[in-house]
Length: 146
Ligand SMILES: [Zn+2]
Image 1: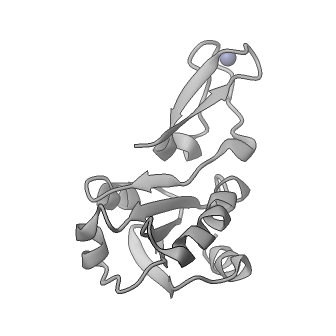
Image 2: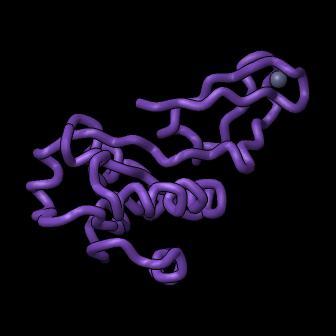
Image 3: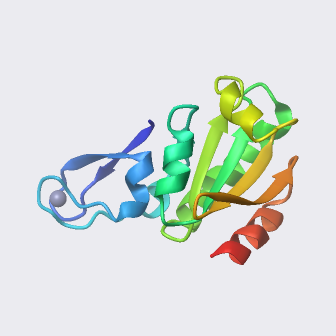
């Protein structure tokens, strides 16, 4: 699981926060002050092992970017997906899954091309977008889920 290092605004100490816990309103491990992630938030990097439990356990809707590192349109979408993570923190969870390393999940959801964007609510797949799309299209879908 990927993680981020955030400096506590209250005591100045560094905290390592696992990406899958960003939405849980983390507190500083040193002084207990709430940590504001602001623009630091990153997409949660899911894999074949973590995918299903994560999507089922979280209470927020989840958008997952199914991508492959060698795909041009995926690389084009990466900064867009990255930007959505801080923008919608605590509203939805932005996640990504590398289909080249996690074929099981990609095959389970019948992903035929990347990028594909899958939207989950209460653990169920509710929406799906195939191919690279403008940020506005993703945001429209997100707005319909929150
Ligand atoms: Zn602190």
